Amino acid sequence: MRATRVLFAMLLLCACGGRRQPQADDVSGFLDDYRMLRPGGAGDVALVYRDPDADWPSYGKVLFEPVTLWRSGRKSLDPVPEADLLRLIADLEGAVRRRLGEGFELVEHAEPGTMRIRLAITEARASDPVLDVLRGRGGGGDTAAGDGPLHAETQRFIEHAHIEGEIRDASTDRLLAAGLDRRPEGAAPITTWADVDRALDRWAERVCARLEARTRRR
Image (cartoon, rainbow, N blue to C red; front, side, top):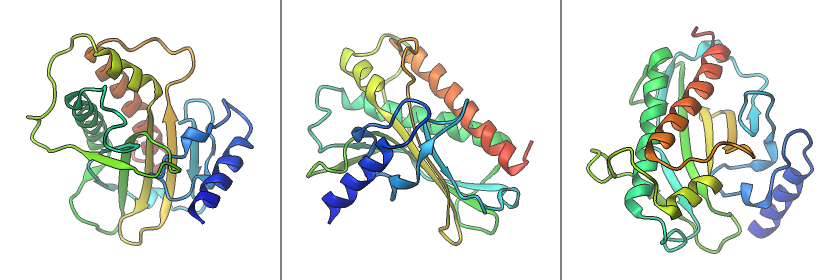
């Protein structure tokens, strides 16, 4: 049943028109249902779903869950230093949390008018027999430091990884939006940690600005 569902999702995704066609590897298993996704418009994430009946202006608070990294088994990313993976998790979480805090009240518990946001860095396929979720340990002590050059395998990982996310009503668990993004073809190479941080800051700015516009926070 699971294999059939995943195959159906992949076939449906590949039938979508618009921007670059979704690939089989887009189905990592982080999102509940990839069949909802459609190619995003200019300035949007690559694949997106939004509830057409959501009352976006009613949301002014965000419960932002810790970012995770999804991989196809613990050893699938062995060539990439784990400290680099942990830094990517921490840097994405930090960039988004900072930008969200400019337009929304960040809360720790579900309250009326609160969106629950989950994000993950993914390089996995739901059809793989084993999936592994890597979580940051907090405190910043387990991440690499500096702005120097990337490890060659870290650079390769960044070129192929996706960012996936979903937004739900924190009280009712109603799905408000879901999306998947990837580096566009022809984008400038990312070769240093300074490049990574600039790219994540730009991504957080773009995504959070669209959320602010939809909720009329600015």
